[in-house]
Image (cartoon, rainbow, N blue to C red; front, side, top):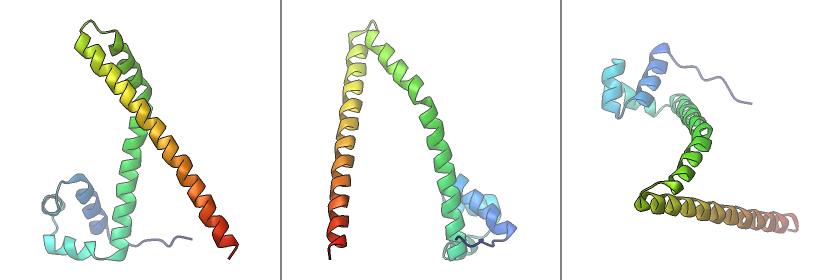
Length: 127
């Protein structure tokens, strides 16, 4: 069960400014809150929790957009393998090979990690 986080309207605005800014100083100016106040709030557990939640939400949204565009990106990369310029074809082929090999490597690591986790769980169970 998660408890409800209570923050002021000013703190919620500050969180949105922190997420949208490249620095605390910029967030301070945009949100019309002193840097000292922002740094104090950043030490507060509830403020940090809400900041993390909102940052995670922004990242998830961005990743969802990237995932939605992956098919188009792959299709365009594949089309480049038929480009007139040899250099473009070579780069596209290299990119495809690199991505496929990386994917195979990640699948292999994932399988190996699953095996290790099963072994660790089994050993814990027999103790």
